[in-house]
Each structure stands twice: as structure tokens, then as C-alpha cells.
Amino acid sequence: MSPEQRRWNEPHRLVLMAIAVAIVLFAAYNMRWDWLPRYSGKLVSGVGTTLWLLLLTSVLGFLIALPLGLAQAAGPVWLAAPARAFCTVIRGTPLLLQLWLLYYGLGSLFAYWPEVRQSWAWPYLRSAWPYGVLALTMSFAGYEGEVIRGAFAGVPRGELEAGRAYGMSRFTVFRRIWLPRAIHRALPTLAGETVLQLKATPLVATITVVDVYAIISRVRQDTYLTYEPLLLLALIYMLLTGVLVLAFRWLEARVPVKGS
Amino acid sequence: MIDWIAGLAAWELLALEPPGWGGVLLRGLAVSLQVAVGGYLLGFLIGVGGATGKLYGGPILRDILDVYTTLVRAVPELVLILLLYYAGTDALNQIMILLGAERVDISGLAAGIFVIGVVQGAYQTEVLRGAFKAVPHGETEAARAYGMSPLQVLRRITLPGMLPHAVPGLSNLWLIATKDTALLAVVGVAELTLVTRQAGGTTKSYFLFFCAAGLLYLMVTLLSNVVIRLIERHARRGIPAVR
Image (cartoon, rainbow over all chains, first blue to last red; front, side, top):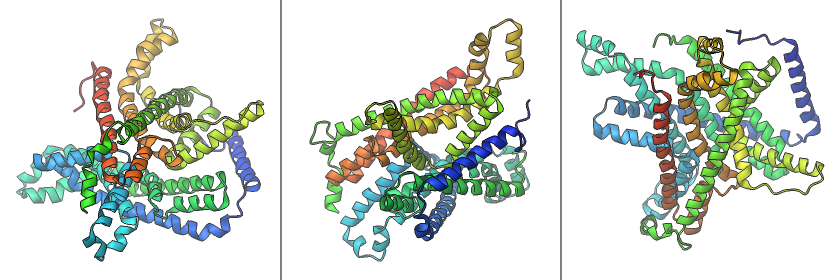
């Protein structure tokens, strides 16, 4: 095995880094960045929207994924079959299509429905935000539900039987052993799923949710620039991904995940 | 409400001939599939090159490939598609002008294949690298000791040995490729998702058309799953089942 991890200060790396710095400097001097101060406040709030959307849909999606996975792993047929169908449909169709189906399809239904139009919920249902949250939540639940199913199925039977032998009721076994062990087993996949979820959030800009992607789109329309805003956007997402990965690495270091 | 439900059951809108939009949807599906297949194959070429480069290349090549796979996997596909779509068509036109040729209009199809290919290439590089590494050294060394040429080792030992490790990842990426084509709707490629929205916008039967398109995507996925299972069974023959 050759050493995979090598030092950062090898000569060729220094040259590559110099080239990278040169490219960045070239971009900074030769491209137009004068729009940046005008939009910096909006960009920060856009990043905030993106992160809030990510947090909200990941947590909600995970909470829905737990019963979805449990139903598939241990539920009776009339629960397992719909749960499996839900996961298959979510994983088998593009998220953009689901999003547009909800926004345009459900949105047009509600517009035809006088009871909904006169209710307190109408101002919310007319905006794009709930549809974006719903689509992203279902997407996360669909993908993570499959993982949770495997996690539930993978808990060794002996541990459950040991719990029963100690006189625990089935519910106590579930609460004390099965659920915590399953979540524990599913944790390592959570980092990857969350990064995927972050990369799915810009889709909501296509239904007029104002996240960081939508702000950049507005910059592009206002300034007629093509590359500068998009490069900045790519940089922002790279930073967010990096922070997420580091945060999960820190988190995983505190939860011992060995031997499962 | 009544109108909406009537629109839900307006099956005649799905007819194949022009007053209906079925033919348009199917043509959109054909475009989606062409982009998916083309992009996947391009990605496979990049992936094979990238994996060999990462495993056997010099330090500079390896670092550059690391930058490529890291960047592509850290940026949302939607952003990459926009960037590559404009940058790719721009770069091609610059080259054409340098060569003294006319500006060319790049078809959405070609640009889409290029974009999906570059994205897929990064992911396939990682999958194939892992699969190559999973073939035990001793097996290739034994083959060399029997006097096989490097090409024979590749054909007889490395490829069959890596296949069971590569198939799950590669089939996953194929499913992702078919779904990523939907993102090309944002840059105006007339693939299934975009034509569905146009059909819905014209007839106001959004629900009907999006459900129909969803069924088409689902059928592609389910059919792919059947084929994948066959390939997997073939690749894993002789290996005891894990579970």
C-alpha cells in the first residue's frame, strides 16, 4: 500500500497552489465584482434561507424516515407496502418534477377551492415556501427511509432477544434497544445525505423561493454578467459543503460508531 | 374545484396526436434518455481515465484529479449545469473563432450530454477507483507470473474481479443520471420535465401532466432496476451471497 495521505508542502503541490492563487487573482482583477457590495446583504440572507431550509427539511425528513423505515422493516403488509411504494416513487422520479408537481399541481387545486381561498392558510399556500419545504422533506424522507429500513433490519436479533429475556415488553425493547441501535447504525450515512440535501436546495429557486441561488439569478439578470455570479455561487456552496462535512466529522468523533 | 377534477381526468390531453400532448411528452422522454445515455457513457470514459490516473498517475495528475472530483461533488448539480452550459458553449465558440470558423449553435442535446458527462465523470472516477482497488494484488501478480500480458491481465483478472464491486455504484449513478437530466430544463433543453411544464402551462392541467411524466420516469427507473439485477447476478456469479 502506497501512502495515500501526502504532505501539503511537496514541491509540485506548492506549484499547483501558486497556479490556483494566480487564477483567483486573475479572476479578482479582470472580472467585474463591483456588484458585490450592493448585493452582499441579500446574499447573506439568501445563505440564511438556504441553511434554514436545509436544517428544517433534514430534521423533518429524518423524523418521517423513522416510521417509513420501521414500517418497511417490521410492519404488517398494509403498512410496509405503502411505505415501500412511497420510497420507490420518491427515489424513482426527479426532485424537480416532484417540486413542480406540488407547486403547480397542488397550487392550482387550492386556487380552485373556495374554502381554502377564504381560510387563514391561504396566504401561506399561495407562496412557494410550503411547497419547497414539503418536496425537500419528502425527498429526504424517501432516501433516508431506505437507509433506516436497512438499519432496523441490521440490528442483530440476539440483542432484541436478550432484551425480551430480561423481561422487557416489546415496546421497551423497541425504545431501549432497537430504535437507538438503528439510529446509531444510520448515523454514518447522515453526513452524505445532508450534503446531497444541501445540493438539492437550489431547486426551490425555480418555484420562486428566495434562497442564495435565487439571489444570484437576480444578480445575473440585473448585471447581465454570466460567470462572475455563478463562480461566486459555486464558491459559496463549496464552503457550505466543507463546513457541513467538518461539522459531521466533529459530530461523528463524539459518537462512537465502531463495531456496528 | 369541479374544473380542476375535470382537468385531472382529461385523458384526451394525453393523446399522441397534436391536440393531445402525449407525443410531445414521449419526444421529451426520448431527449432525456439520449442525454442520460450519452452523458453516462461520456462519464464512464472520464471515470475510467480518472480512476487509472488516480491509481497509476504521477503526483501532479493525481492532485488535479482530486481537485476535479472534489469540486464537482461539492457544488450542486444545478449550479454546475449552468456554469458548464455557458462556459462549454462559450469556450467552443471561442475556439471556433480562433480557428477562423463561424460561430456554431450548439444544440441543447450536445451541451446537455457534455454537462451530464462531466458531472458523472467525477462520481464514476471514485466508484471505479474503489473497484480497481478491491482486486487483490496477489491475483494480478499471479497472472503476471503465469506470463499473461498486461492486456490479458486486465481482461481476464482485473475487469472480472472489479465488476462486482463496480456494478452497485455504477447502477446507482445511472439512476442519478436519468434524474439529473431533469435539471437541464433550467437551461431550456426540451427534455421531459420542461415539455411537461409547457404542456401543463398551455392546458392548465399541471397535475395530469406531471403525474404522467412522473410515471414515465418511474418506468425508466423500474426497468433499469430489472436490467441492473440481471447484470449484478451475472457479475456476482461464483461469489457467495453476503446476506
